[in-house]
Length: 277
Image (cartoon, rainbow, N blue to C red; front, side):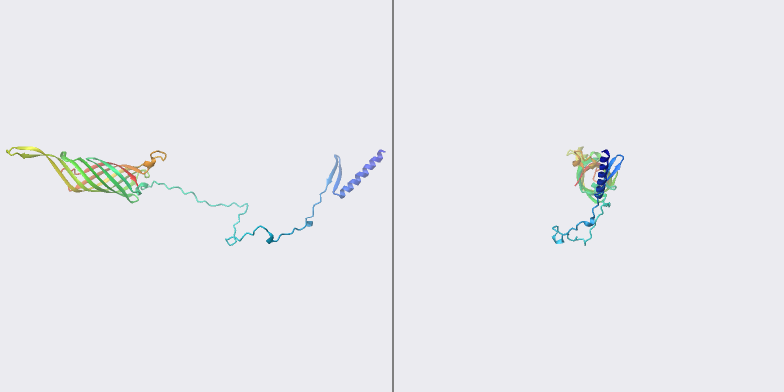
């Protein structure tokens, strides 16, 4: 009986293996058991049914028009690195010039207060002539002490031609140039003169002596000035003082014709302030 069932199993195994091989399935007996190997047939691409292409006129998408650049289209390959040259940002120029600050090329208006053997005040207009040259036109008046206890007074128009040189990149500078003046100058004082009375008595009396004349003055101007634009922009006074220059100058002047008792030279030390227009 046992031999019958073993023979039947062997017949079924062989028959199944043969049928499976025809269908691409193979049973392989291994020590670990039975392994089923299934062979999948590769589809023949030549048997694929050809697809029907639609005519161009039936395509709902519009045909792109020819480009305006004669059909030449620059196509950048997918893996190509394109380098685009970008101009370097422009660095703002330094406003401080090596031969004059930025304010020297601007019209400026200000005042001058002078001290010395004459004290006076004047208004001045500085007009740029060249990159580092300017004219100073002004008008002023003053009074002072003349010789022999006399007092002096004057009113005048002034002109100066200045060359300016930088000390610290336009922040501090000095200037020098010739100066002219024209106006009225005078002296006054008490003098002792003999006086004869009706009785013939001679006595000395004090009399006021006044002298005046129209004169022309020749001299020079030397000064140093500071540009207040260096003040920090965050400071509350920056907007008010950024166009202001302050300075100190020395002005010796000689006048002709010489007025009686007038000093031979008027030496004035001035404090000035001007505002760039």
